[in-house]
Length: 124
Image 1 (tube, rainbow, N blue to C red):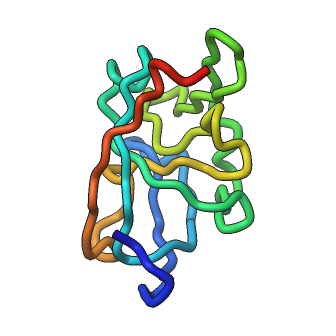
Image 2 (spheres, rainbow, N blue to C red):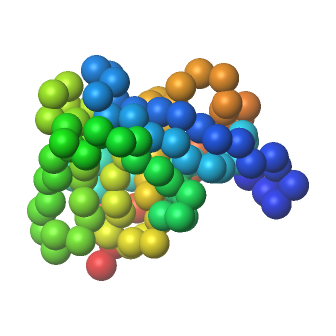
């Protein structure tokens, strides 16, 4: 689990075809979650969040992104329109942060992942 004493590193990540690339500042040890909403459960994503100001989409990535919304339309399920991978997205309950897929982080910067379950299915 991350704490104030954990060193902040720059994580690089993106999609499978590497057309979508980004960087995010976060601890090397992260507290991640899985969500049971209908979309996240089907995708099987494990994520952690960073403040919007600590996330940078690399130049040229935007043109390869598309967004899927459903229900309230607040959550923005962003994915690569070439390979279909969701490497990050905007949660409906946390609009000031970006959720990053742990499995889409390039190797070498994550030292520990503690996973908890989030009940997105029953979020009002």
